[in-house]
Image (tube, rainbow, N blue to C red; front, top):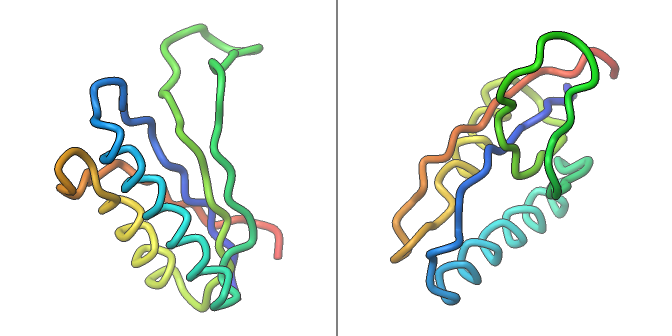
Length: 108
């Protein structure tokens, strides 16, 4: 098994109808439950607040919504999960096609 970090980028929901927001978060929770039941989910966290850069050149940091750590058989499986995260519903139930960064963790 190999662990991967799936980084989910922020999507502004300020103008979404409450039902669309609920559908989106239900989808995320259901996906986490499915991954946990399969033994693939290590951790999932949403991120809040603003990012602070403490070293290096200051610049605009990407707004991140959260991350998942999954422990899967292959990179292909990690990419399949990332595609499902990316397809979370947005307004009207239309898949968002969010940017998801997938990185292999170096520690077992």
